[in-house]
Length: 161
Image: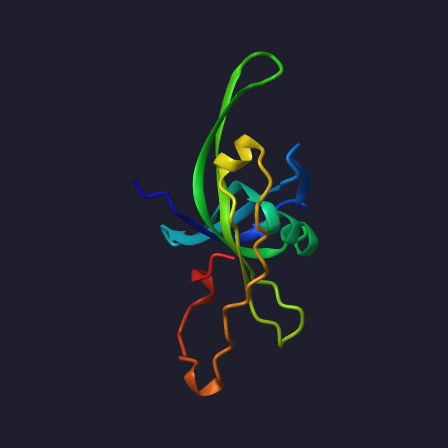
């Protein structure tokens, strides 16, 4: 089976960082994505809120560099969580376990997007085992020169953020 999710949006709250008993970093937040469309001549916007979870080094990087409102692209897998609340009621939700993130906010005009891969899986999180090797920050995107940038005609109403 294939389980892959790609989302671009803004964080709805600051990163909440904690550590497992085994010493692995776990960070959580939520992402808001939007879709603009026209229905019967009326412009509308649909917003979707998704909880996201980072593990290991990417959790620490997210906590260090991201804040409420930060624009990011995340790639990961959809995860179904189930638990009993304080009243004994069964609760559930879908969330995204982040495997790769790209920070899309720019610090000035010269900054480029950076990609941070995650090594840990949820299984190792459930076992509360620390990462055996921290994944270093990887910058694998290069800014193209001005001659190779194609010109694309996109209406601002089509951009989801």
